[in-house]
Length: 332
Ligand code: ATP
Ligand code: LTN
Image 1: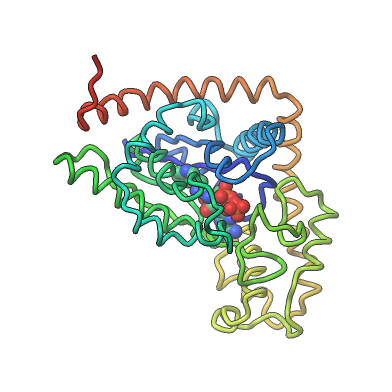
Image 2: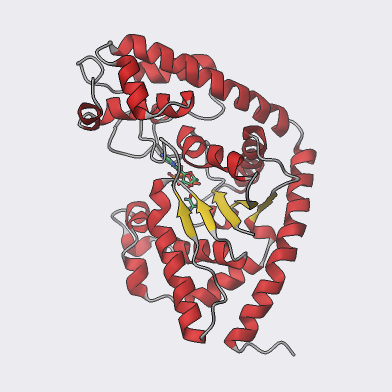
């Protein structure tokens, strides 16, 4: 059976980009695939984190998965650090990773910023750990937002490198699944930058737990241009902020872009923004409410994660043992 693996970092406010670009798509996939959804806390440590907050955010991401409709019985939900095989396989794959491959990674360049020499080894090796996450379960499909495409290519390259080096077909090459009309949700303040947890301005994003008033305020303040809404897709594409808001509307309403452009062509932004805010508040209101209900009961969340860790360890351990054998590591 085809197997899906994906994850979100417990690093801050989950936002509409995480929901539309990733989590929402997983809900439908759980019907057809064997799914493993991880809260990648080891990845979170590639940048400084407050321990108390990291714990709270790990529970919050778990709650978001469940609130969005991921069934913890049907899918394996766990946090990465509870399965030691992720870190072990990352080391083994790291020994097969040429530095040249890592030097091409645009996310490292963005996150390391100007002070490249001060960036940590973990941040540099981030894509290797991500490849280990996926390959450890021999996942065949990986549903992510568009920003993760380059990391997935590296995971495929590493699977291929391992298979060639040891003359096996042990690892399947994982396929990226970049789905939906909102695979790349942009910042509300700058239509050329992705909506991000780590943006310092809270007005740049809509958080999954924002209430209706906050959503309305952020959308009202969202950057736009002075013209009425575009009449064609081509016109929309030349106006990044308008294009982004239309894309968000389309994704929330379950329409395609053509339909959405046709619906609002020539109207003014204030009217459109009001409708967008109502729609976003309706969709996120439901999920945010459920997230608050779930996080109020950390005992339940922790039980889900404990059970997930058991199931994930049981899947991972035999694969890691086989990798040890293939690579010649003695298990006396
Ligand atoms: P940061 O921006 O601080 O690095 P993030 O918001 O990208 O964090 P991640 O945990 O790295 O959060 O991403 C989780 C999932 O959400 C990934 O599949 C990623 O592709 C997707 N995602 C993140 N931001 C967006 C976005 N703006 N549009 C669509 N998908 C997104
Ligand atoms: N790098 C991813 C999170 C992530 C991931 C994974 C996604 C870590 N490991 C494995 C899919 C599969 C991100 O979203 N920033």
